Length: 255
Image 1 (cartoon, one colour):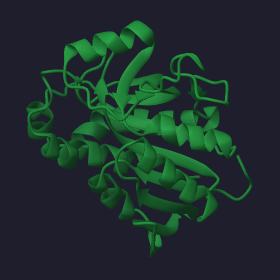
Image 2 (cartoon, rainbow, N blue to C red):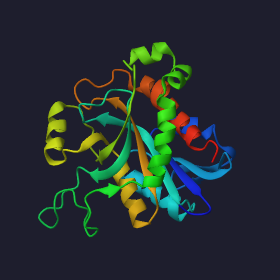
Image 3 (cartoon, rainbow, N blue to C red):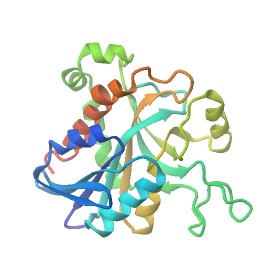
């Protein structure tokens, strides 16, 4: 990590960025390429917060702007994801070990999922950032902290009892998973995947090409099949947005 830290914080859901924004002191907003970037400090550390918009292209464009225009030298992305691994339950959190684009297929020129010209299929998350995030996430998921942050009614509504943190591989693609067959097909080619979303691997690729550390934090909102969460907007409002805010708050405490 660099001596002077300037951390980009990306939210894949607008409600999440609003929660994190409340942590920023001396906020200054700037509209750049159809996005609102909020610069300021969290506990004395320079940050730039932005809603990335959805999908790989939008996330990649936002990441490039954070690095090139706003000069961040580390990036954190938070958001929700669908469970692929059978171990995961709604309310669990997945911290990225590696990122892969599950819909990237340039065969026969390159192997399936391999990023053309980079010679890489998986991009690893930064270990220091991951360790830092892991400590903050574990604090959020402690029973006492969880019960003080979220109401029992809300937790019960989504069947959340003892949420856990998992570190593992995350797959990204411009596809919304909504049936069991999609999950089975994904696991046939990428058996280590924990969860699926639409931005993380694009962020990781841009960060890799710019030599910028990054980590992806995902809250499991549904099982990526026919049994998806009934009230997704409520989950965002009552669970994932609060998770994201508390994780970021804990990451920046006593730095």
